[in-house]
Length: 110
Length: 116
Image (cartoon, helix red, strand yellow):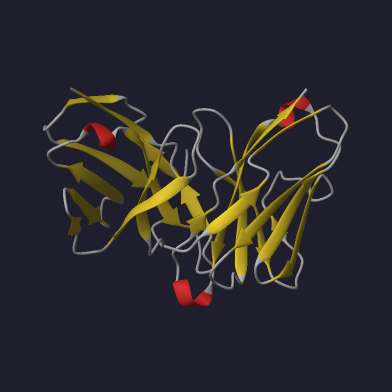
């Protein structure tokens, strides 16, 4: 079983619509959670950290469910520029080692 | 955000040659640098953790004699792929983390290696 699992997608989303997807993690001791965005053939870029109480950053909302060990990302009012692969990232230890999911591809269409 | 650079951005080499990739943190002191490898449509896989002034810690299955890591200063870490083979062709990405940045890691732009 992978440490961090994601639905690879693609999620095809009409422009302006809402899309949400989850990620599950296996290490119950994980303390830090992140969503990164990766464009084709580029490096990952931090989209947002995920806090226990859930948090919002503009059109993006992240939630954490520790009991079920999953985190979610919701994108409202999707823009064409939101098309990317979204990586779920979980810390593996206290030294900063991160574990990455394989990513969920989102394609926003006109 | 913090800036991390990598050089070269892409390299094509013949099988058997060695390739050195540099990772620099440009505006902060990176006490820890991480080296990842990503094959197409797969997740980033951590290869090794590099702390300034000490030996790198390699992940299971990563050959330390093949992937030489040097972290001689707080702003520079290098990864040398020795005697590269076609199966080493991949996207190599470094990330840096410094004390002032907390847990957040910032990634370099990556190096695309193609071994013929």
